[in-house]
Length: 262
Image 1 (tube, rainbow, N blue to C red):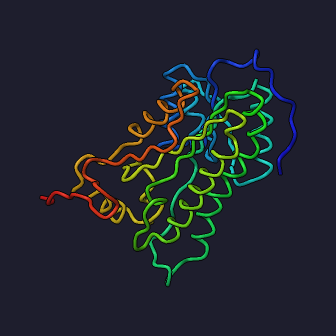
Image 2: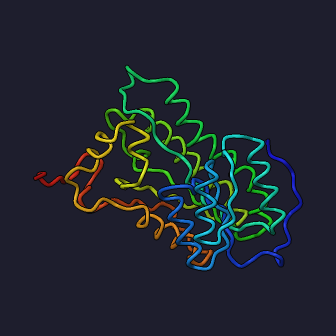
């Protein structure tokens, strides 16, 4: 679905306004905080209302409870943002990984979830807001993908497939929307230590801790949020097409320096 809505009045819109998805935790929440500190008006979008309300109380963001894969929720989000004056920036952070099985042992439900959230959800919300961003005349779409969209690894086939797909969609979007003066930015983090990512993927607290074991200073959600805020705050003619960011200890996807544990 791509409901038609009246183009918002640019004169009624604050100078910087953004929708940030995946805002209830991790990089999404950190991005809301960073943009709010810089004076942006932010619509914080996620499924967990209680976390959004707490974030809104902390930052002044506008909380909108929505599932980006649900057509009705996306339409309601679009109507809410339109009524408030619209946005010039869409920051797609919602996504995630489930499972670390080989392809031979792939769990169909995990694959369907990853493709639905990372690819279909990003498509639905971007499709919905493109008319508004075009009408603005200087719109921005930033998609958070992953270095898992650059290099495949054992046990990552489902997540690799989702992030390769999201990356391909992002690259096509940049070509399609340049004529509308919409810049499209992709941020591809490597090893980031966040509250829930590894735990949600592996389903076990010890396994989640082992992902970061011995790694000297993995990236934090705040590190990635700083880059996102920089990219969307740069002068509009400056497009940081692709930003690959890893901790120094992760020289490549296959090379992570781990110190001996005591």
